[in-house]
Image (tube, rainbow, N blue to C red; front, top):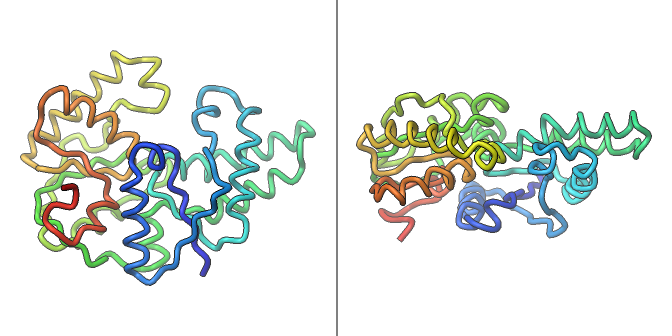
Length: 251
């Protein structure tokens, strides 16, 4: 089984610890992970802003970078949703407009092989207990892409519940958006901030020490607001919790 890591731009540039944690967990489970250096941005920012044709070269480059791998694993539901839901559509539209008939095939092939991290662990490897230790109270925020686009369901929760020492508490209003939404936060800052404030109030009401998520884009949004509030609540990606075998993995 050939497996490649797709860390995404956010993790590569801002939170490399999440990508490292993803590999740590996979290797602990006996999976050899490759990192194709040809990969770049998947094109989600361009596509979400309306630049479909400008996204096509990135679709092609991403598909070529991961050609030949059985599974492409990413700790980012939003980027997985971009590839799985939008790549085939972009490829089909390009072919219909006479620009690269092979793009649809390449995009469709990659879409069928890309897996969000928790999907890969639960559905492909068939595990929920990854040998982690994290003796803290945690509440989980399901991001919109993971919840609605990918249908991750209870996979992240099942993984967290199997972590030794972890106390998982329910997040009120868990299914409500945190307000990030990619370029939405830039174009609608007041609404975005209000939604983030609601999410933070709900998270703080749980008494948890850690706010866990599976998308660092959402966690970055919430982290900035938490820091400005002087809150003691700590955002942490699920992969970093699953990689933990000590009391303070972030120290």
